[in-house]
Amino acid sequence: MKQVKKPRTSNIKFPKALTGIQGFDVITDGGIPKNRPTLLLGNTGCGKTIFAVEFLISGIRLFDEPAVFMSFEEKTEELIMNVNSLGFDLKKHIADNKIYLEHVQINKGEIHEAGKYDIEGLFVRLGAAIDKVKAKRVVLDSLDTLFYGYDYQVLRSEFKRLLTWLKDKKVTAIITGEIGNIFLTRHGVEEYAADCVIVLDNRITNQISTRRLRIVKYRGSLHGNNEYPFVIEEKGITVLPVITDALNQKSSSKRIVSGNMQLDEMLGKKGFYVGSSILISGTAGTGKTSIATTFALSVCKDNKHCLFCAFEEAPNQITRNMHSIGMNIEPFVKSGKLSFYFARPTLQNLELHFIAIKKIIKEIKPSVVILDPITNLMTEGPNSDIRSMLTRFVDYLKREEITVMFTAAITVGSIERNPSDEGISSMVDTWIMVQDIEVEEKRLRSLCVMKSRGMEHSHYVREFDISNKGIVLCPIIRHTNGTSKDLKRRTKENENLSTSKKGEEFKESAR
Amino acid sequence: MNKKLNVKPKPAIAKVKAEATGGDKYILRLFVTGILPNSVRAIRNIKAICELNLKGRYELDIIDIYQQPSLALSEEIIAIPVLIRKFPLPEERIVGDLSDTEKVLKVLDLV
Image (cartoon, rainbow over all chains, first blue to last red; front, side, top):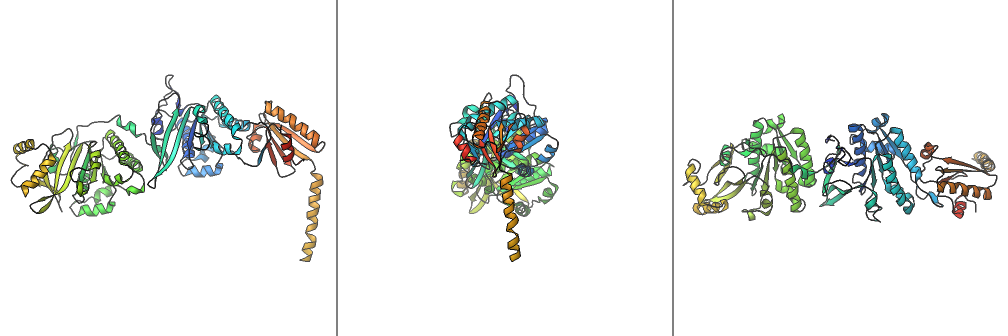
């Protein structure tokens, strides 16, 4: 319930009613059509009722608009109990005469039909209910039960009459219905009847379920056409209108140190840009997490917040492991400077991880977010999906001016370039590659800056050593004194066009 | 044992008889919406049916839910017009303008 923007109800704009559902009001540019009925379709258990209830509750809380909820399925007591877990206190609103719940009993089979009829009885009841609390918002949940009870042909025409009736009553209404049974597939009732049609969907891919929302139709208004993932959490529904995040990106010229002086040296002597994205890629055991932790530690020492999202190791394992290389992160964890988000990638899908992370970000407002490793998340779903999600996430972080560091594990067979790296590397600002190389029968860790947008950076491959004093970088080859002799380095750099080539050259010269 | 068996059936039989004699009348309620065509037809039809089949042994209330909307709620009414047989039990409901006389008679147990 964040978007408490002023409803845009100027005469040029299509009048809309904010739903108060996070994200939804953004993709619809202000909510659902005001004083008109909206169809909310979806299968069982995809969140229709919760969506509808949240819409009503927001109306009461934000705009003091009384509401009517007509339930054809749940009994009122059940409904009160069910939504109570989401923090919606219907009882209180009932006591305040702000909401009126009515359960409509439909007994199929007990009703005999003899001649023509209509469902005016429902209209009368609805009218009485609306008058009772002077309702501005109305929900009918769900019409399917009604349709099962009576003759389909009668109800079809009555449904259209209901929509007109609701418009005449000048209430903003949501009518829920199951998808595929009555609406959308058969005869396309909704095609012309409703002004706005929203479809909710609960899909399961790789045993992980994702709820998605799509606006099928919205007369008189522009709207996002995509399917938007959404989650139902303890505070209601959050829709992810992530595309909008890209709009207000900021590009800061401020710098943030990496926590390692030699690495800063390689990055134009100043470290990363604030709000940039950094990729650390490398094979297993090359020290990616160590670099990330060094960075985290330096952020914490600077008295800023850091969020460490661990997808591989548990937080206390990281604490222990980092202790062994002289980095004591425990005090910062205790003081709350360093927060952990730990979850198995398979626990839920990537989008949900990002939602969860975003929530934490909103709470603790970190200046740095670390994702370690991002490749573990990549196992879920097809790659293009992941990349777009990651892009949106990075866009979001950039907008918030949060520096993000990913680590990515690449397989030994594809040291040079990894397809998944390719994907990410185009969207990161700084790409640091760590790998194992052999120098004189010795296995060395090496580090090089593959790219770093907008800054002068070293093209050298450095030896990179992890000891109990942390990370130390040093020149790799004895016969070049790269670090001190800047001029010499420059000439050397000019000779080599690509860094990867240079790595090979070093190897060769070392043999 | 014997005593109980002898005592129990007697009042039971008596009760059933009393009900059968006392509640001989049909109690019918027709819910309508003002003078909408379906309602007008339903009123005409039920009156005709009652006069023909239940002369002298029925009570028919015609209730306009426009006038008494609260009854629509308490009687769980959605479809209109609707005829509710309150007695004899069980309660039966027939929706529609009652133009299908055969069906009405069948549901009301009058054939």
